[in-house]
Image (tube, rainbow, N blue to C red; front, top):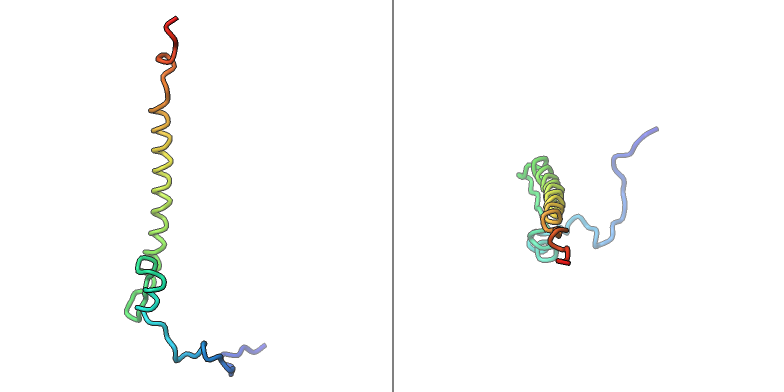
Length: 87
């Protein structure tokens, strides 16, 4: 079995390799906060790992929020003795 590393095709005009996206156009569409631009000088591995670690922080913050919710629920529960009538 032989694998081909190249093949000829007729690309559509919109798929031409001559047209490249530029940073400013993508930033205006997506937004700067949702964009990580990787250039030839950018260390790809570290960039990807930092993005993944950013997602891991959300799990930690979610866990902290849930724990604080249960603590608040426990602390603010009504005291049964103060709810009894004076009869």
